[in-house]
Image (cartoon, rainbow, N blue to C red; front, side, top):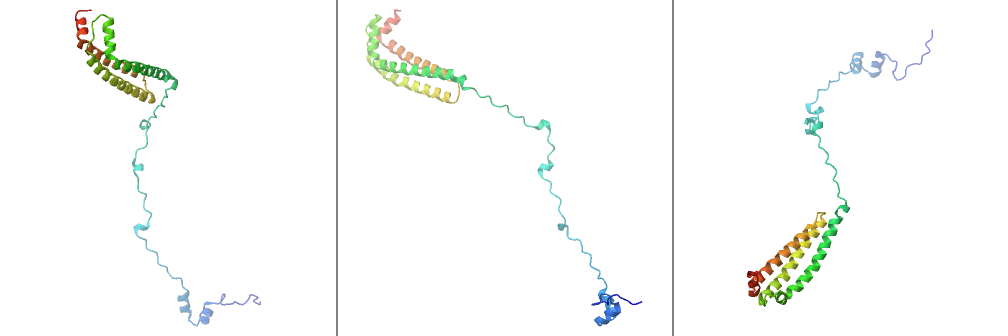
Length: 204
């Protein structure tokens, strides 16, 4: 039987003897060259090559949240309607406007305190008023003290109004303080005048 297979090219079907002959070496040397080499087993790397374990954080060490640890939400702030403060604003401004009118009238009378006291003393039959110098001094100081009291009162009232606080009582307190100051000055003035002092002592 005729072999129809193609003849080997470039030694692909050559026997070891033919390969060794073609390479000019012996079969033993060919076996040594073509024998598989034993590759060295890679040594294990240092411990630093391994993936380090994940460090535990402070959050990992916290206990699980509990229902009783929850922070309660603050209740929503209840805004006071502006209509609830309208009466307070109206009353405060009304009393302040009245205080301005009373202050203007009072300061004008303080400047003429001596003649006014003389007229009042003669009208009620208490005799003749003679403490004009003291009346002039008291009138001067009252014309300064009363406006200061009003300015302080109005300032406190306006500050409280802007802060949304009750303010109607501030003009009342300021008016009471101003009245007490005037009363003290008039009491000293009347008891310092000989005619008025004699009339009060006699019970007239």
